[in-house]
Image (cartoon, rainbow, N blue to C red; front, side):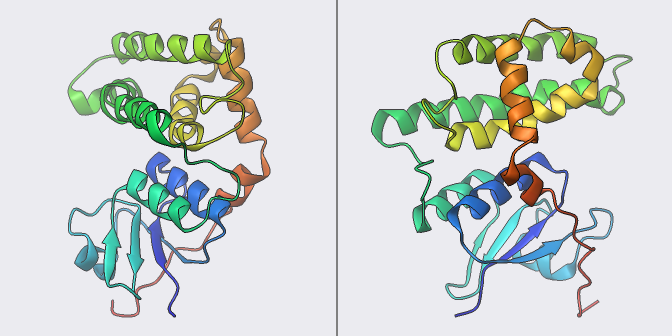
Length: 209
């Protein structure tokens, strides 16, 4: 049976979380590192929207081109670390991820790239995004992880975006009173899983090009 094929970009937070779920699931796949300025025709034929990640399942002729859907698919195949919650817990996880991917990601983009939105500064959006991070820090004062007693779906889905926010201005982020959130992020960036998913891959060359 042919292995799944993942079109990915190393620093993209959406692709990072897809790789995290694939890594923990143990699902074997072929990694194709994409140069975003020169997207391979084979990826665009599968997903014309042209964003990563894209997971191609040749055995089923199925394309999954949303990162959360890739995470859920991978964990449905195998979930040895019990990342995938059930029932009400899954509904809460999906609600948190929806806020991260919607309002928070919008603030993150405007903070990190203010010129793209015609802004002179991203400070206002930084401060609005910080309200969500303060809520996350408060939650971690009640439990070790967003998924509860152990790392899980919500943690993996949010971590790459919190990381990107933190790295936009590391000095400012370090000065915030978010000890639990900072510790959670530091643990993520120091983990074996992070090291594995951030391993560098040469750009994939499309043989059809």
